[in-house]
Image (cartoon, rainbow, N blue to C red):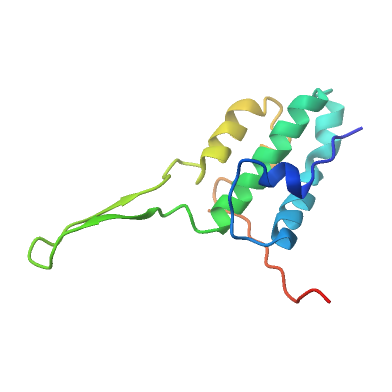
Length: 127
């Protein structure tokens, strides 16, 4: 039976300004890999890591952290800017880790390399 990950699992040692609803939607999305993970007898500990990496990858891309942040800027006569941030081919360090460690492609195959990312938005409020 596939491993269940929680919002707390995804948020542990990972900071994001996205809401718990957005984190849960990412978890629900990567849960779509459960049948593949089980069919390939992926151990529980590895399933947990892969699903956390998948959820974090999606959240990272969704948070627009892909483009990086302004690192330096010179005046208008020097006209120079530089940015720092992650620019890996998969849009996040979690995507790279996921691609390397997901030997069966169960979670990684849910993300399309031809698109920058899959996005969710939570609408509404709590009562």
